[in-house]
Amino acid sequence: MTTSKRPMSPYMLGPYYKFQITSVLSILNRLTGVFIAVVSAPLLLCWLVVLASGEQAFVGLSAWLGGGLGKLVIAASVFSFSFHLLGGIRHLIWDAGWMMEMSQVRLSGWLAIVGSVLLSIIILGLGL
Image 1: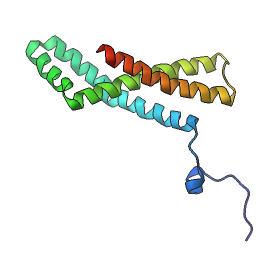
Image 2 (image 1 turned 90 degrees about the vertical axis):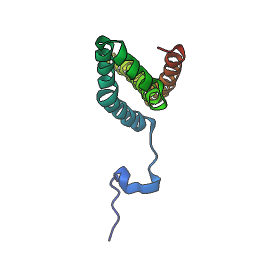
Image 3 (image 1 turned 180 degrees about the vertical axis):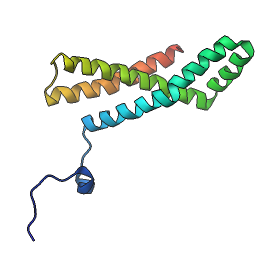
Image 4 (image 1 turned 120 degrees about the horizontal axis):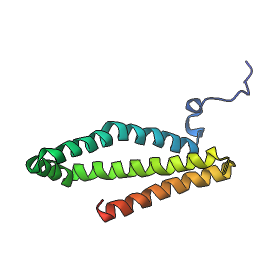
């Protein structure tokens, strides 16, 4: 039986497959997009409804958001929005035909990650 030299799918390579920044960013983009759609956007809508419903409802939601789980959801939402913003800017740069070399693609990926973390820290630090 001869061995084929055809490329193998990553799942077939087992421990030999090394995640690349591009694949990690693609997966992270999908995960944060789902989080925004399923958690962040409905929570923002709920907050707006509660804001219009009166002081008692607002105090109740504020108490939940001030707890540990609420703070975690807010932090994850801020990171998700930040990552999507910087990823969108990254794609606009590519749409203009700039930074298309693989080294530039990797650099822009790392800049998106670091920028998202820094932007999230700044926003959360300001208490917005």
